[in-house]
Amino acid sequence: MKILKDHSLQAYNTFGLDAKAKQFAAIKSARTISTFLKGNKEALFILGGGSNMLLTNNIEALVLKNEIKGIEIIREFKNQVHVAVGGGENWHQFVLWAIRKKLGGIENLSLIPGTVGASPIQNIGAYGVELKDVFVKLEAIDLSTGKKKVYFKNDCQFGYRDSIFKKKLKGKVLISKVVFRLSKNPKINVSYGAIQSILKEKKIKKPSIKNVSDAVIQIRSSKLPDPKVLGNAGSFFKNPEISKRKFKNLQQQFPNIVFYDLPSGKVKIPAGWLIEQCGWKGKKIGNTGSHAQQALVIVNYGNATGSEIKAHAERVIESVKNKFNIALTPEVNII
Ligand SMILES: Cc1cc2nc3c(=O)[nH]c(=O)nc-3n(C[C@H](O)[C@H](O)[C@H](O)COP(=O)(O)OP(=O)(O)OC[C@H]3O[C@@H](n4cnc5c(N)ncnc54)[C@H](O)[C@@H]3O)c2cc1C
Image (cartoon, rainbow, N blue to C red; front, side, top):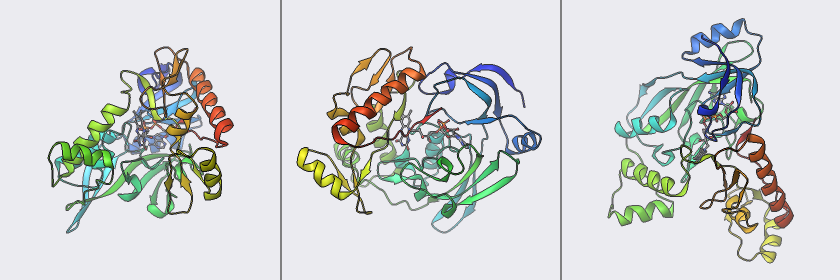
């Protein structure tokens, strides 16, 4: 394992922030890292695609960049297959692989940046599908012992952009492999109006998983800034979930409030709407600001520091709290 010193992370995070890793190593296999960890005393930090983190400082730990590759069908059933994927595989490339093999279940998650190994951490989701819907199990390496552990769905405590890997196991394991259940006879999920509109426009009556993926790619490309052009980490905040009582009170004050009733009895309010109502949409302060098309996305206009972006996020949180008495929580990992 080659260890580099004072290595810039600018090319490894989608905000494009020039933080440095005191030490940096790319991990190509689970076995190498297991062996290394058995004698290790260094503090460690796991890096995937850097698309869900805000680096506010240099990283004093040894940064391990997950580059464990491989996609393999490990079990085949009548209607489905189990696919084992290396944690360092690019998520979207895996989606495209599944589409080429005509295996359905993840087409709605097209174009989400990052690695397969990070996908269970916040139970990635988009357009009516979440990772947990296709998850079977994962293999992780305990960073303190180097031993392999297996986590099944029930162990992972999946929730909305949440899992045990964001809580009790945060920073404690490296996810080296994930096993997914994909369908040979996919049920198409076009519950989102935007997907339906594109399919209608293209006069597609019986959409394939490829058609759905193409529609999702089209919508995402038109709505979200491309990190290669404008640094960002996608949605910066989670959509808050509040009690029905609190919602009714708010609705009296703000009759146009946008909301979704949840099966839990709570009410979800789009964070983007709240931020927009506070006047942040398209507002630029110094090198950072809230994106003009999607207020939920905070962008780096070029030379922002992580601290500047964090300060902007704090301004947004404060104004939403003052206006709506709702505390926004970041979806992005602030490091
Ligand atoms: C333009 C854009 C759009 C996005 N859209 C969506 C969306 O629609 N839905 C959605 O859910 N997310 C979305 N995201 C967020 C992001 O893509 C996901 O959270 C993704 O899973 C992060 O993967 P990553 O490899 O980049 O993780 P990183 O940013 O590298 O890491 C995130 C956290 O996980 C830890 N980590 C990473 N890999 C591992 C591992 N193998 N083992 C243990 N810990 C690890 C890191 O230490 C860090 O704390 C978007 C981001 C961008 C930039």
